[in-house]
Length: 388
Image (cartoon, rainbow, N blue to C red; front, side):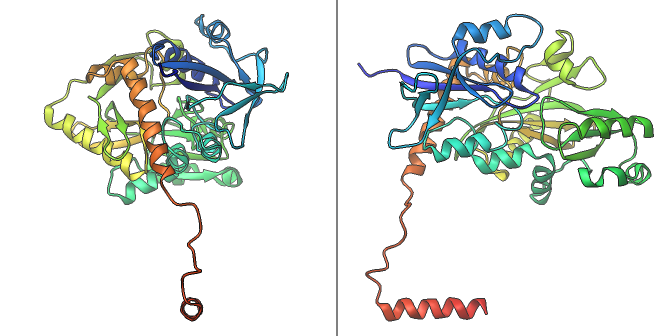
């Protein structure tokens, strides 16, 4: 009998979404098929230290209505780079921990969803669930992703961007003239509505700018779109599929961090959304186009605004969507006929398939020994002439 696949669930992290990550990790642990997979829990505290975490420790952080961060009481560990792939080292005993076969990063926000961990895992030659380095980085940055989508002919909200160096020079009147009021002010690289404010006056705008700059060195100011908030999920590598859409009906002024995670009555989730067949098809097609435009693989959730005239505007993409009990990603796939355990299984298989495909690529330089020296010199001269 073959052994179970060891799946490292990587959670926590240094971002402001640390606590949400713990909730997502718990739900993945509970949903994964234990007959097929052996979960290995790896938590990252807010200082960036890695730990081997027992399930009871994770549950202790997520059992109450108050969100908690991971305490530094577990076994400290490091990921080893070497001939044996997926090797973990206990930093306290210096002993080797059992090898892991695939990693499921459920790190929301910076230092996890932005390509940093993906690059580490790629360097370590370990399969991992979700988007690669490029798509993760692009998807995390609201400005870059919007520019790429706009260039691909996909409608996005009008926006302006400011860096920290420009903070004291931001002209409220110029912003109001371009975007009108109200506007949304957001950190460019953050999720879960952290640091986001809706501003309708100069005072609110200035306060929103100060708040957003607490979380990022670059902020984005977006026009207010009066429309239904629709979400659609994408799953796959080369041939992705889209879920049925769902609708967010916020009970607060907008779908804030509090509404998402702390207030049981913060929002109504209408799954599936009440939409015509034509609108559902257009949303699914657009979600897949966004997914492909940003070079995504594995999974993503695409958020839309649907205006009264049925015009679709892309709000943003989330390359590591939430996996909490009320999160849209697992809920929409369940409504589409894929259960939570089946979803986890598919995501793991997609990660392994991508890894195996990448392993077939050549990494050695071309052998020039078989090319006549005169031909090689001729090619080099031609290239030099082109540069000149």
